[in-house]
Length: 140
Image (tube, rainbow, N blue to C red; front, side, top):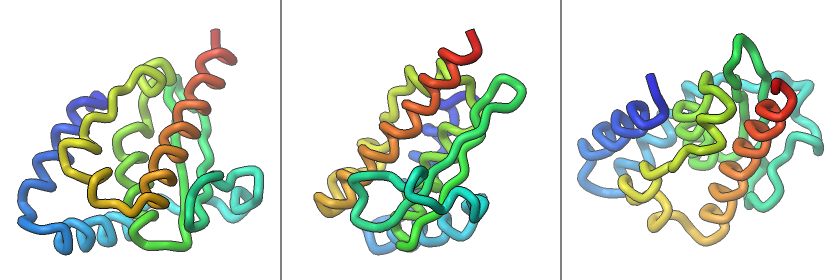
């Protein structure tokens, strides 16, 4: 699936829920499906700066696509990074670099996060795109 197809699926999934308590519960449920990052990556080097909670994010490049893994010590944040990984993992670096992550606005995520969680979301996206830039440059 393309990045936009995945985003459209996520938007559709979130329309099922009437209020943000249900949407938060869905994020928590998504956190349980997050591919767990190897403990070797749970170091300062892979820690996302700007997040209120601890978030570790790693990326690998295989068969022309980026594979992201992550973990967090907070379930909502873990659900958010699970959403980002669902959208951006197994995509080509140039597609990740150029992705317009419109689903964040469409599902109302940004407006329903605390300022510190919102900053963390931006930091996670930035790090994922930096990995994409690095892999894109490295593989030219």
